[in-house]
Image 1: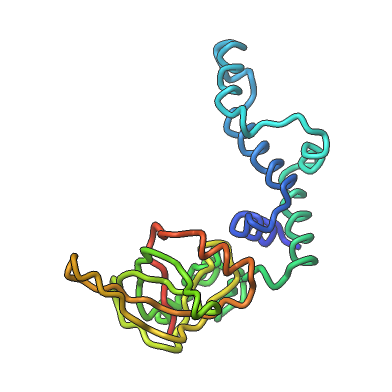
Image 2: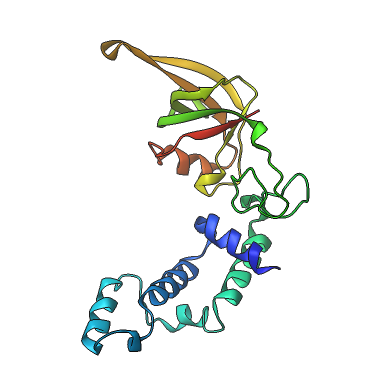
Length: 215
């Protein structure tokens, strides 16, 4: 496996890291930010900086063992385990032109050949709430506002930026009236097959950035 692939998987699908792997990565990142003691004016200053990252620094031997050979090996080992155990949970965003891995799961321009596939974007949708209904338990609704473009049934919601390997199809479009506010929200209904993905999305609530709706 290339380090590029290992970094991509660990960086963009952190939910798939084990608790120990996540702890090891946080420890490495904290120590990288802190740097060596000799770059500080005094050992007291260095120790004070350590305290700032106390929650991320560990002395657990099993955790430290994962990064003792270096961060490159860590990324490759963690990503290899993830692909062996849960390959269906990873979305490898390959460029349609050169088939090389894009920078992120939701990128639409290749960093290698420059090819763009932004024309697959049909709309941008700001999510204000994610919910399900008792009478329709298999449907997950994303309620919010269309910021640009047009949304139709049969299009897909790109959820890869949340660390999920899914782009569920919009099966229903409904409206929620807010009479007191004199406005209506659009509710996009989808089917999410995996129960853990369904619950993760349902509990996520408001999404900070608009999601992409694909053609």
